Image (tube, rainbow, N blue to C red; front, side, top):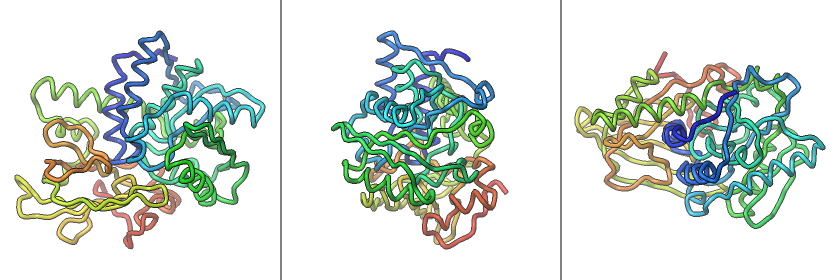
Length: 357
């Protein structure tokens, strides 16, 4: 167990935004909330999954909803604590630790702000290694673990418990309906996990990975070097396209932000066109009509100058951007993993071929 230093809050937010692959919600509000809690004297300890007892009970938390709504409605850490306490009352047992459902975007900060208020450790792991939009798109789902119960709370003090669900997709449908009814944003505590389940199916080391990416970007900026190249080098990624945003189509439907961004090439990509589809997260990049990179490989759109990640709700005409690809966690490139998060799960009629193959 180690104390998470205040100096790592900003790198965590920066790196998590990159791993969000366009989704997970902006980490900016979470960054401000966590820094405020630290300055009030709160602290958070981080532990490795291997430090958990097999029978430990772990809270898996995230904000659920459309990123553009999360941008407008500031998250209150007390709402997340409310969802966790509701689960404890339902189960009749206290949690031993907290982990993020997804390390991407603002949901990477969600367990930290709750842990600061509850004096619980955060596990250096998550269940996506990035951000994905739906409940069944986790390593726990790939492992066919139990998907219920789930608690959901919003800022108006509406509270919902989904006691049972017939499948992971049914859990997604039931909880998404409740989320949409409360305004397409809510704090959730997903099905509790045992220490043994986290050790077997959790994607380990992702908090450290986000911090590492954030530090690489900050160091490149300080040295007046290319922060996009720094991320690519740090994580063994690939620079796929450099261009400028010339059109964005975006709609909030059924609790998701769906659409497409069109890019025109610059520098070495001058004369080429790139389309990137998204459902909260970027799912498929197509260059001049040919698929270039798809889920579950990570598709990250970064500001070409600052290296700051650009969420799907932040896309604007004229932005100069670099599209990079990062390798997917191995659990998602297996046949069972692709059944949960492959291109067809997002409506793309194609088989997955990794750009890292």
